Image 1 (tube, helix red, strand yellow):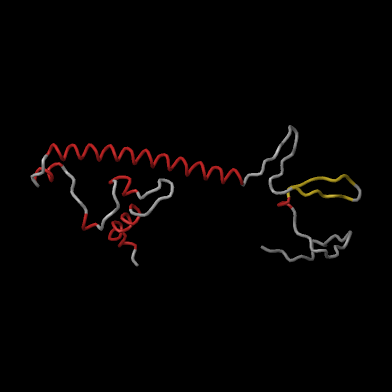
Image 2: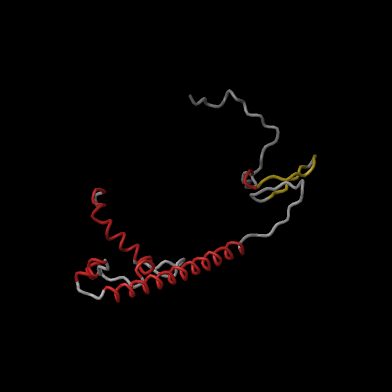
Length: 156
């Protein structure tokens, strides 16, 4: 498809996002805003003041109903906030359960990639980070062979 046609699809993409269930808030963004399940775009209601007046509804009753809806919306938002806190707490606990508890003392050398202790036949052992080592496949390494630098081809 052509990248220029993104504007034709933006409405459908937004509708899909707004009507998809979100785990952290425990409902869809549409339900959070409008306090009801989403309808097809053709079925949307107009809840404006002028629409109520035009349809000859009792304005006092409609106003009271709107106040009740606003209170219910506030309760729904509070519940959603609690759901998001519960979700964050669960993900925090899951993350912290995977972390290893380690104790470090002053003067300890910390090697983040796995410590490997190397030994030398004529010197002391020492520790290095594992990611700094090259693999050794048990091939015989000739000792005291100094390559003649003149025999190597020069790459210019």
